[in-house]
Image (cartoon, rainbow, N blue to C red; front, side):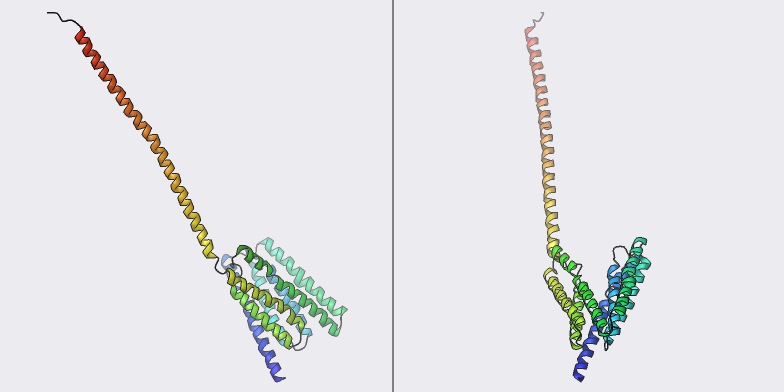
Length: 284
């Protein structure tokens, strides 16, 4: 039993530490928002959904016994996601701010409130915990399916620009830690969703290894395009020069022909003058 508790402690702590690092990953994004003093180009829904998930798991952990590590990590996520949302609302435009407030009302106020009321009044004891566990598991599975959009974008663009390997790596480690932790405490609601998280994490890292060097091909194509453009420019220039030479050469030939004609006319006039002088008689 002592060894079992040590394993639970080890994987619970590792899950908390790795998840904490994952939770701090959006800090560079909000630093950019702080520098720009606006939140254009960023979405608030990931943070609203993350807060809703943390609230669900917090409620589940409070009802379940011996779930200290679930309480600690989800407490941290509730605090950090609330901070992210507050920063987003502070720098967001009016339209984005209203949309975020609607999402918060839908998920974190009415949605979470309705789940609490329904599970509290319609279920009792272990049934309440089971129902809430199924809800948490289903929601976590839907959250883990979200990276499919990024995976599809990586395959389509053959670029990993929008899929940082560090985040994928830590998400995979987090899934492994929480999966083992769920097995050790015999809670499938914690273990099962992280199987899918592990699969998608490994898939993202494999795609990163495949498409991590797309820039070579992307750089070669512009160079070839520039070279072809230069060749086309040279051909155009040569045709222009040739046409100008062709237009100049006939002009010079015409001038020379005019000179020859004028000289012939002068010679003819001189010969005619000499003939006339020879034909006229002279007085003695």
